[in-house]
Length: 218
Image (cartoon, rainbow, N blue to C red; front, top):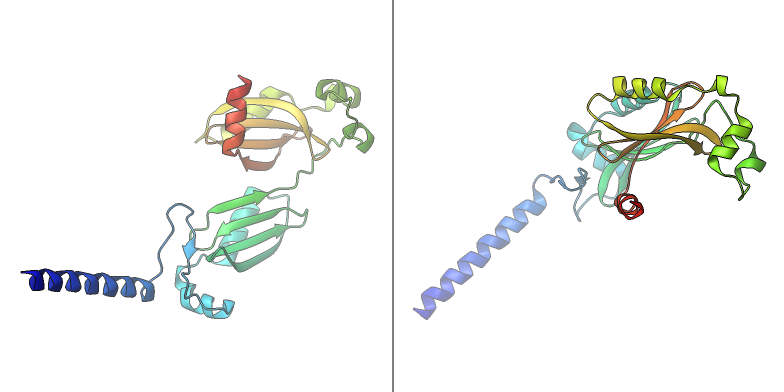
């Protein structure tokens, strides 16, 4: 009986070993948590080799550039590059204004965005750096109210463009030394809208820590 038990254990171990081996040498798997195409520990060193192996499963650089240009039509895309990061394939994109983006190379999903905000109503450097400046006082001292797009117009535009999300709040504030409306949406999303034109300048995802800070403030 002991000998039969030992054989069963040995057979089970061999089956598991073969299964693991086939998984390592077979097709790559998607990391569901990040959405990235994981290369595995046996990934080739050469980017050319990586591209040759996974070409059929990658989004084209043109599709990424097209999507980015549609999202920010006023900011020309100047770079798109396939790269390996954290053992996965990504596209790194840049715009003429210095904005940087990271896309999942397999799905085309936007993973990270660092959008430079360039509005139409600049705040003088000496005013923006002043520690005594309150936002409302600063805005009143710099701005002719006739040049400001009203909040009703801004929110109407957001509703038209973001029909799958709801508006949680909005405020006139300063971002990168320009006057913008900061609009909070469901889905942990914030929009930065040019206070002088009403154009969406940037979009960001709110981190979990910010959510907790908001709850503490309440």
